[in-house]
Length: 364
Image (tube, rainbow, N blue to C red; front, side):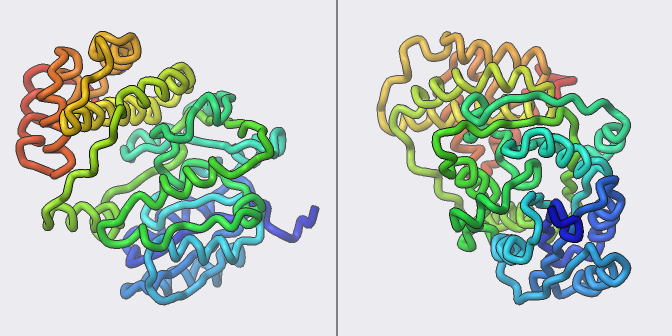
């Protein structure tokens, strides 16, 4: 082992993030684990982001800077991966922050189980993130087969570790057609393809840290999510093509993922999971109506649906789809999905009205 080389590479794409960049870079500089490098990819920023990156690199050689023409976040992450020197790879966004012991915890777990993927939670609440810094860090062991990499837990690229050796061996890249304008989803696309890489028939071990170690900020109006939201609200949004027998497929998928998700002890991931599956089932109901297919027999009384609704109630996680599913109102489920997907004002009216009238105190 060459101790002159970093053990973990952190790739941070940077684009017009000057107002928030110091928060991110200070949180990386404060890591209790010393053997890291941070590759800052200035993706053609028009503000002072590039000079801020250069300033951090001048003070700490573990920061390395790449200046390139604007090509989108996928292009920037690919450039960072190309320059990375460590086998363990982690991503962060320029307007976010990470807990100071994130790398120490992740690398400690990987020393015990080098073949594993380490995952952690995120939060959009700055107070919850601050509180998590002194909270316990329980670790749950699972496997990719038990968790299902289609679940909401893998929707983000910056809540897990990656093996750069595996990435390079399979030529894995971020899709540069995604990650700019209204074309989002490059995170989930990359993680899905990473998890699907051949491992010679062996299941991928997962080590899940049950604490929100990543702060996902939402102040940056230049972020890809904000740009996509503006683009989608400005244009008419076409609904996706309906998928045949989607509810049946989802019921089978949920049967394998539900027990593991319930045992994670990771509140944010569990909330995301519940909302994710309710919305997916709503898409399935909408698809069935579009294709004039019957729903699975006794669909709204199925034990999988009942368990999903019961846990949603137990956790007090508000979803606009909870009440229609609880009442078995297929037409309303389908209508709400269409409004949701097309950003129709009626979706938000129903959302606010039902939360105010029936679900006060549930987490929005």
